[in-house]
Image (cartoon, rainbow, N blue to C red; front, side, top):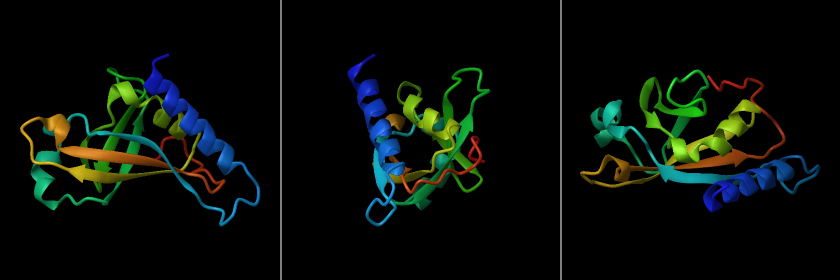
Length: 140
């Protein structure tokens, strides 16, 4: 297992352990589990919506377990518009958390004018460790 994947798994394990800790001060904790570029920017609605996107904006994730190219695929949406995907090389921890019904929060961490679509949008994914799950593994 490469160092990045191991690090992400350890962060997820820590977040899940904190979520299961009774009486955690304040109850709710956000643990950053992934910071990565948006994959597929140029193939979805992101170019059309570029001027409307804002740093800190909340987005949503949808699990695509039946995706023929990646069984761990996670699509990134802004409302009804798909912006792209979490990168395939970095989606194992988040897909596992989604499959377990864990609560996640995804935000735009950065926006950059660039000719390279992998440099345009940076995302942050947080595990919400309030001890609750969404109750639905697909996160529709």
